[in-house]
Amino acid sequence: MKLFDVFKNMLSLLPESEYSDRRFEADCLIEFVLGKKRADLGSDFTVTKENREKLYSLCKKRREGYPLQYILGEWSFFDMDLEVGEGVLIPRRDTEDVCLHAFEYVNKFINPNVLDLCRGTGAIGLRIKKHCPHANVVALEKYDEAYSYLLKNIEKTGLCLLPLKCDVFNMDYVIEDETFDVIISNPPYIDPAFRGSMQKELTFEPEQALFAKDSGLRFYKFISKYYYHAIKDDGYLIFEYGYDQAEKVKNIILASPYRIIEEIVDSRGNPRGIIAQKLANINKKILE
Image 1 (cartoon, rainbow, N blue to C red):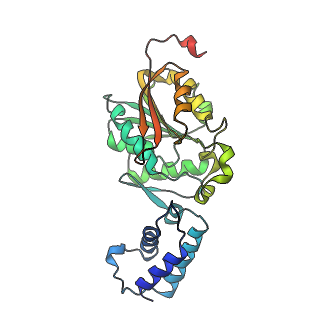
Image 2 (image 1 turned 180 degrees about the vertical axis):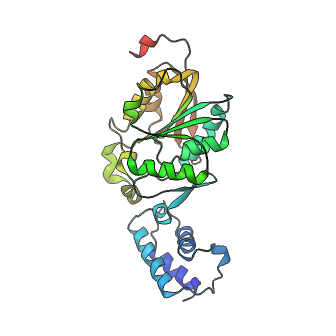
Image 3 (image 1 turned 60 degrees about the vertical axis):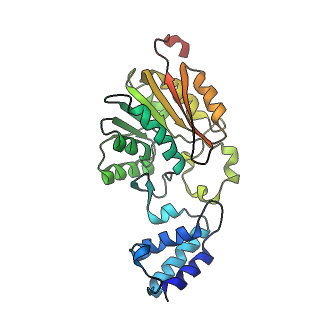
């Protein structure tokens, strides 16, 4: 069967929603199965029965909500192709928008020490290291499957950063005072109450990377308070958050000695993150 006809059949099988582009997904699957760029395959290219069956099977899998990124086994974050799969959060454009703003603050320091919390694939830490080669980046991840992807992506990109397998809630007391110029995190932030109303694709991603107690705010409360001591005076705390959490996260941060430097809006015009600066010369008893 000719590729033109296979493509039409795939479009009829793939899901249509505001979250997906059937033509783009069909092209991605064709390149994945046939091992060639779509532009190099003419519409008269003959697709074998075996490959047709593979393509149709993957389309049906997508229709069930299984993420395209997991099928492909990798996904782009800026100009890096990162390995992804079950057990790790998929990198998203929203996080790229936060990174673009973070670069400016990392670059304020000559040899900045950067801590990337709740790291997953390593997307943020790796891209900071690529953009700012002089940065010393530490990436922290708790869960085995996600940590394995962090290690794979460090090796794949050839970028040098220090991975640590540990729990955010058990590391604050280990880190010495004023170690980091920048702490950045895209933590789990979905309110568990919304578990039943999410888009289908999210149900395949790891719950521990999506949901947080305290109506999705647990990590913001803990990190802003208990990692305060680890930030150098006048250093920065950078968070990504859900589009409807801006005021809540801002208030959490301001409960500790920080000042808000910038509120980040993503490419779709939604509130997406915040940059705060640690106030210098504050009596540490304020946080006790």
